[in-house]
Image (tube, rainbow, N blue to C red; front, side, top):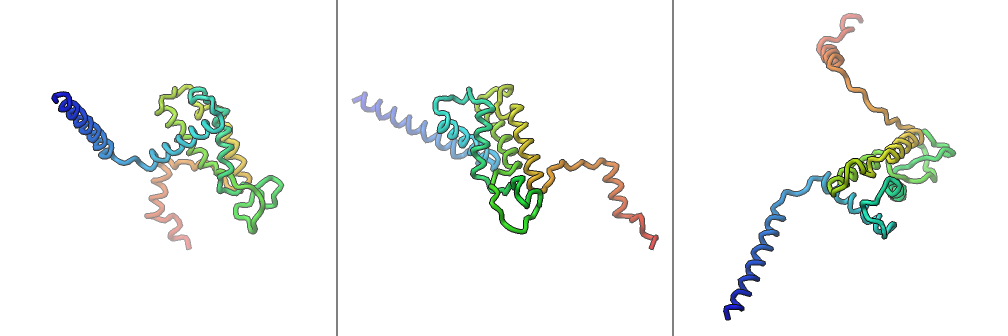
Length: 183
């Protein structure tokens, strides 16, 4: 009889422990939009590896697999990237539709690699061996950016930061226009 009582107490204590864990997990603050996206991207990459390289484990992943993944994602892109033979190559707003493929935009790929690079390290990967930060991936992204820039007629040049001196001059010109009395 004592045995059954102890058995009931054990089950009760397990229920209490498991309910404490559930309460702790449910009281955790919700993840940010960035954290959610990073988790989804990481799961997508891991699923890609399982489906295409079933015998390979994550620590053996390298930049070649990352580049294959980026090329695989191109089929789901929504950005029109004109071929060099297309009459709208280099035209920012083409006047008519064409048969050029839809691809992933450079900005989307760049952000994706940033999230995957962070997720790799969060999952125990060595930062020096991070395949998402490899030179080949950086070169690939640069080439995608340059080609899409030419193809779409959109420049991806970085905006130059204005110095404090330039900001002060602009602020003074707003208050005291230079050409006020020269009409």
